[in-house]
Image: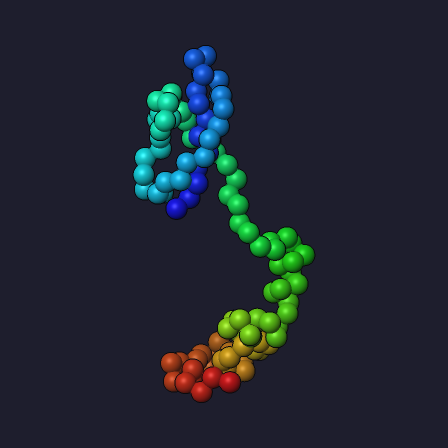
Length: 110
């Protein structure tokens, strides 16, 4: 369940002290502090996503064909007009718009 940040609403309408509250996404936002009963409002926060999500880290990981194959991904690179060649993972070596693959073509993945 996500953790939401709430702030206590001061009598003049300004924001006061903040606190975190864990609740389901489907639950309605709190309108009063669970312990004190003071009026509160939810504060918008940027989501936190752990891991290496920098531009250079993502570029490096997507360009590492061996690693993509180990993770179970298949990567095709455009080799011409309507022609794609496999560079990582399992699947047909070449995909062409003139010879589309069918379900039977996937039974002998290499």
